[in-house]
Image (cartoon, rainbow, N blue to C red; front, side, top):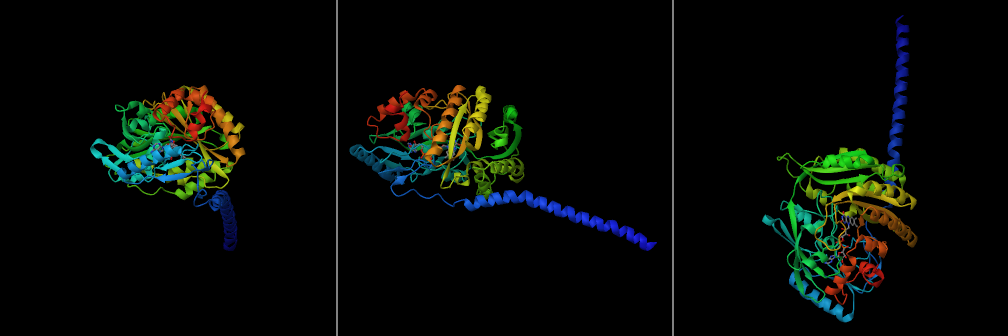
Length: 512
Ligand SMILES: Cc1cc2nc3c(=O)[nH]c(=O)nc-3n(C[C@H](O)[C@H](O)[C@H](O)COP(=O)(O)OP(=O)(O)OC[C@H]3O[C@@H](n4cnc5c(N)ncnc54)[C@H](O)[C@@H]3O)c2cc1C
């Protein structure tokens, strides 16, 4: 009786054990299956990645596009000492006049259309001219124009201050940033020119002038967003703000609800930074968006976290780089950003920390492909039509869109050649393209259509990228351009300051 009883109880126990084993094995297989594909994908990406970008051959320079290899006659680095720099720079400009050499001015060379280059020209490298001083009580930074945000932010951090308006990365110089009139994700702000109090400019004849809204106001508005065509910006008085602690809120929504969600989330006095990112996976192309809003920390006891190295940089790099040329990689990235990242990121983060990330975290270092930025400015009323146009145009041209972020920019009251003559939403798009003539032609055709789509909704496009816009498109987007170039020739009659942008749109061939 007892035996039978034991026997009856043993059988289900064995069965249960077997079942548990089978399920455990199945679960393990499923886990391995689930993680093996991303693991293999990320391992291959890491394996193919290069540590560094190779330098161009001697005598040549390129810009961030890696599509503008140009032979230059000379690269001249500005001495760090201001007095020596001013003397030697004026001598250099005189020599360039005498020898008939075109002069271009280079910051970090992250523009992408040869804006810092002339074939066989003379290049002034500003990056060695980078000293900083602060008038803390006036929130005013005096900065030499070659200083990079990556040098400025840690320095300001130690003094409790932060940059007021800048790009979303720290790899750019002040001179380059104000010469393109950059903007960022600082909500409710115009572009950076609004934070420039004044600057000193060395003109083509070697004279130095101070420019502000009251002193030489015409030159002030021409040089800001003037692409280095009016002289060398020596130093700048730039407004700064206190560093602060922020907390992030995110929402993932279908694209039709994105604007309404954004409006609700931003409608808060502590909302300070904001951007949206769209899903770029081919099967959900631009149909979903993550809205990110950073709010000023209301808990006054909350200490501002110390500045540290960017977190999980390698993992984020491989996830991002693995999305180039891969639908699976794009899907993985979207899942990581919407499902994993919210659990990994810190609750409280400093303003300086958010601004202090270099482009190295995601830059393309492959030999045969490059990443090319585009940017379109669209007024609110044109948003739906423009997004529908993107959904149609990009797949039709087989454009490999890696990323699109959307930010809000207020109207620009300061620059002559302006892209935001009314409040705009900026679509910042990063495309992966082959570094061949065919790849560039494909991108040109895509760009021309995208610019037309922006123009159709009373929008504009950004000038520091590839020079694919036709002269007709350029003049339509920038109706002030003809007068801008006429004034360039008034201030620089010998056209000493030149670059590829000027050669394409400013010289005769560029007239409408
Ligand atoms: C990965 C990436 C992300 C970007 N993100 C953003 C963004 O979020 N927002 C945005 O608005 N832009 C963005 N940009 C564009 C960027 O702001 C511009 O390309 C900017 O010019 C970069 O600064 P730079 O120091 O590299 O300038 P450079 O490319 O070196 O120079 C740009 C122009 O400024 C002129 N110039 C430079 N220094 C001086 C000087 N001292 N005096 C006179 N003229 C000068 C040059 O002649 C040139 O015409 C991005 C670019 C890249 C590659």
